[in-house]
Length: 306
Image (cartoon, rainbow, N blue to C red; front, side, top):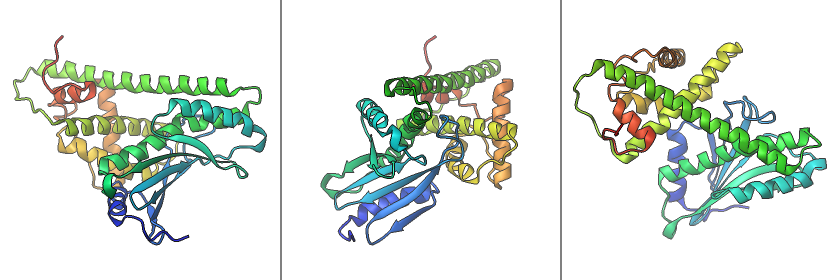
């Protein structure tokens, strides 16, 4: 059924975001529907693995839009009852999205979110990106658990959820610990130099962008190392997605990435990771270390008290 009454303004904003973030998407102008994919670049669970694709869809309406991500794995008929219990338990924990069996007969699992635009005005690009991230994160945190529930017949829905939460907490702790290691190593090098440079204080939006970009580069560095260890090529789509984050760090003088071609870019990320692990000063890109530390800790950019 055609939906020609959808908001062109909302659709234009979503179109710009997907274009800027280099998603390969299709847009149905008659119905106002965007479809695109997301490449899972981490081994999240036994059943949601590196190399899987999430199918994402955004349906634009007259004064709102619906967004959902479909799992690459199907739910077995024999486990649907346990899966429904698992979904109910998960949804209680989620604030901004929900899981559902969108097609019970086919066992299609999806996670969705919805936003009603005030007076039909277009949402901010940041909101669109946050909603996409919310769906992907929810699927990574819990989507694989539903696969495990099917594979282990004696596993209950409660136990599967506890397993997901354990893995989620470990991932968050690993990311925090890794960021702290970067901060400590940089702080040592900065104290050795003891150069009296004027500190640049960034606004809150830029600090948030620096924080998100740094985490993305570190996660991408881990993906490169995984690919190196398993002698598989680094996914081209992952490279393109990370380049925008690398540009943020480059513009704030945190690291000089080489954008000449994909191979050169991957090599500079390898260098970035290697220098961090060796504790060597990363050229001049971390001369504004206090700004990075403030972004990671949510501070105002000033000196922190010891």
